[in-house]
Length: 469
Image (cartoon, rainbow, N blue to C red; front, side):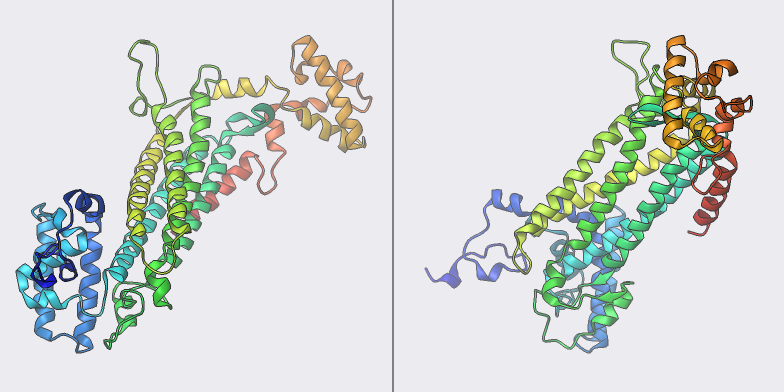
């Protein structure tokens, strides 16, 4: 049998002419990406319209072809929006599905759309447009989370909380100061997301399969039409680069790490052993056997989902590490990690901002806990230094005072003046002002300190910054 008399591999595909037998059904299912890449449809249509308008402007296709393509794409957009578009596994991916439908609607004009481009630069363009939109959305949600934290911090700028190192009571801080630490983290995440967007926002369209095209195209025109800041300068890199997606996943992983850290604290604080807060019922679940339980499931699941997102980052870097230039089928595997990361971080940030707003603070429990671990010991050491005692000597003196208070089962502030003077004769009755929790936090009023006045100043700065975003 002559090769050209054999049945086409898939007459509806864009590449069937080269093959003598159809693709096996199991291979078709294995290689198809339409079950997940359909979500690129709006970006694929946008890229195709920009490409078509450029082709018409460069006289590669006619004005009538462009009008037909625009008309057909309008119909396809409406069908997708109404849930009436029929996605076909036989057509492999979102790109062939849309192109096939376009051709059915407008005939040869639909077949001319692919002039001067390849699926390689088409896919790269779609994924960049999708990732850019995700950057913008995540950045917006990070602003909302910061606003929620700032609002809670402002309510508790004076609420005393034990500050911890090694999960041991270290010094008293205010809850407002503690919450503003997370505002700082999420502010950096916001900066990272915007910085990542700069490298996402470059157009690969026009790189074609790998070497560019012989048609007289205008890459700057399509880049401008799609809102890109610039074009990718090398056609080989343009179609094979996934650094932008890796960078986005890395930024998301750091954000999820920050959310996981905060979740760990909320989980501890809600435990009866701490009893610092209560999380609103709508973010918790009960037990199937223990009727008294109220479990902080959302916070726990955020910790778990951080591992999920980090896993996607590892998967994508591993996917790329062995690929020679340029495009390889491996890159089909870039989308599911990217899509799932976008879904995960989006849902997490939406829920978290609401959950923070529903936290009920138990200020009395926080204050009592701050008195349990000699939190003002450093304040006593500083007091002695101000009286002229060298710091290392004051450190030793206070350590002995702490040991004595521990034996008596009292706080440093509960020791009498005479008992304190036994450790250093320079101690006077003004020492008790330094040993109070309120005096301790109030004394730290420098930039970055925990004094209520400083916390309120930082809150005011944060509000102004967030309002400008």
